[in-house]
Length: 393
Image (cartoon, rainbow, N blue to C red; front, side, top):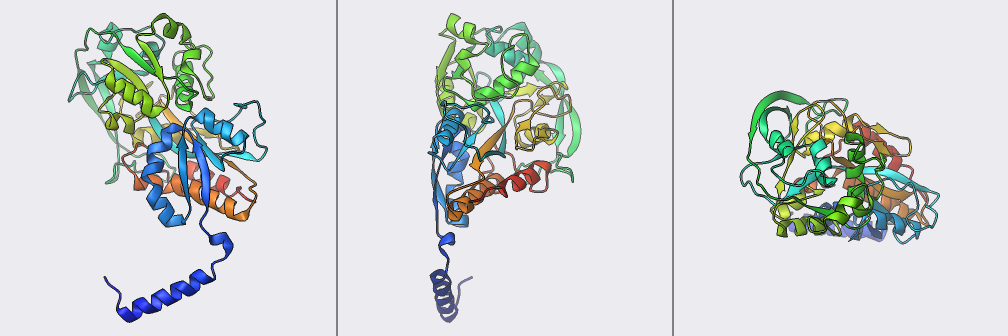
């Protein structure tokens, strides 16, 4: 509906008066932000809406969780996103004394593969996935993988809204509608598996290996259960990587592994689910500890984090062998690494706005990017708000 000319003129004058008296603290702020490549796509997709809402802006420097942590240690960044807790120094410089963790994003690691079964989705049990990345399962038609893909199995159906977000109860738990039985019947190819892994210091790798350390401690005895940034080729898989450089190939960033997998027949990799869509990769279903066939989606990731322990400092501990129905074990919490004390009130206000807006509003703006909608009233949402309130000058 258009304003009348007179009303428009009055509005323009009033707006000019208001703008003339806006205090300096209300001025637009440009932040320096970077870190985990996992959130690069969704941050980019939300850029216009974020600036329109807050007036502030930042150009996100996508690199890795390890680099984001280094940039907090050197005071380069106003805040960083990291897929793992910042518990040890990445550079030898002390972690800032006032730094805290805000668990700002939740997302499932998508197990992605160069699609050899168009129109069908392969299944991989969590244990067998660990064996693939440990170099113990080498071919797609290995009997263990064939068994995963030729069986009857249950699938938990969650209630979702029109955008595909999980509908949650008063306690923040996804609402289960029912459980159905599905028949998985796919003949896998007699081809070697090429593992595409992150070559850089990666929080995504750290989270994947943390899950493996609980799911398959025999083959992953030194993987930290607290996640952290990890270099895959220096992990428990080091021997497998060195023994077969043709079928273990590394490259940097989430976009990098997805792009390399797209060029490599019979490959498998791990990254945020949106990279599967962008690179025309298959996205595997995972068989969890309950025995369910689970998609890497909002509801299944929300179910995993709903029962997680959230410490006072914001660090989230996930149960990777959770036997609850419908949970997706390879779920990640990405932290905003922020300070409780900034040099100016303007900077602290801008950081507050940026972290809170992206945590609660960005997933609605970019619903197809693979990050779950966090309810402000959920346990995680309440924790985010309480931690944001600690940001000051």
